[in-house]
Length: 230
Image (cartoon, rainbow, N blue to C red; front, side, top):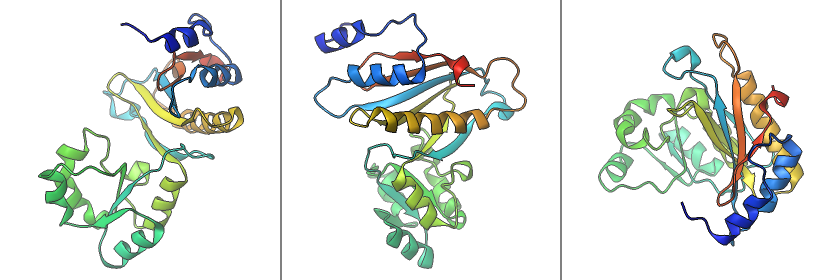
């Protein structure tokens, strides 16, 4: 795969064989984010879990203290008083059954997170095939199926992110932007790691965090020593 000059230059500063401590890794990732836009900094965490077993599935959500640096558009499925509450909380889109054909037939997906009140899940369930593969399906574990729509919307706007295992048992999540200070990125990363450590399945034997890599959108991956995090 051919890489651009900027990537090649940035990659020279990173030793792929080294497991860095968190502060050093964050510093390197920030320095290697040299694109002309504000790159997203992401954490990729390979776990020792086997997601094929229900008791080793990891899924949850955490509010990053400094947010993600991204403006998040929220869609809330709710009716009557709860719909008014969602609008007052700052949700960009609020509706019920009338949104189904728009999403199903017209391919409307101009939102980043979907929240639903429990009574609306029968309606939202009809969108499973569309929202599921995109990771947009509301879920009680992530706090996106709830009667407290005000808290849900406020938390999401404040920087709440959802983490879950993908098919290869890796968690991919944003921890901020390249424009953040090293302290802000460190706070966000530590908050995320603490949440993931707490989510360790009790049935898991052996090493939980197999590898942890920080990377910017266009930059090289920087490996963190997972043994220093546990």
